[in-house]
View (cartoon, rainbow, N blue to C red):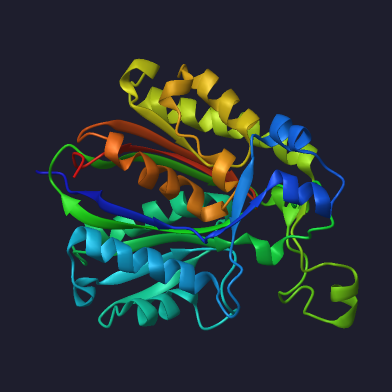
Length: 332
């Protein structure tokens, strides 16, 4: 029986115009370019400054550009999934707003929250709708406006995050390309180390939560780093071994762009040289669910049909995972 897989057939990213570099940050908090680069690899990040704009606006721009690139009519899209931890509102979901703004009149959709692993969890989820034959064209968007959750008086976290959106089109294929294998994991112990304490049912918004800065992202950097390094490296190794892959078989490692030291450790464990690692953290910082597809977007012209990619991420929750993906098309 012919195996049906879900393949990425187009990718398109969108980033805000405003660039917040390390020099400007050093005037806001007690930090330096050397301190930031040596610990994270980040030199600048994009920030949405336009009043009245939110995550759905970035996502919609990415989707509209994707439709143009793929030469697909908006009404041909069956489903849109938005992976995000910065929805415009708790409800309605961001996917419905993106569908409206991008003109996806016949699509339904939903949001998915897996923090920095959101694109991987979304890719696995979206692929199920494609491979079972239910839908022909599914859009997955990784989009986060992290500047809205960032405390710009906290030098440990404010240097890390940026805003961006990126969308991919998924379609069925019977060729030996697409999503080949995946391994995804969660562990609730991570809630104490990386979270947004207020705004949900546990700590509803109040004067007290605002005064205590509980609506800003909290991260225990040391513990997150230690667990992330091991978890990402372990799961990449697991997926590669299961698929009988060595570093020579992999065209690129596509890691979540959280910290260059974590990326370097994962690449070393996988036996991959620097030229086989997609890296743009220096320009965009950590854009959470958008980092992995942004890499695919920037490297699109270098990818060839059949290239084996290993996508990997680690995020709050904890959530983490790795996907073996074979690229489905040659440069256009």
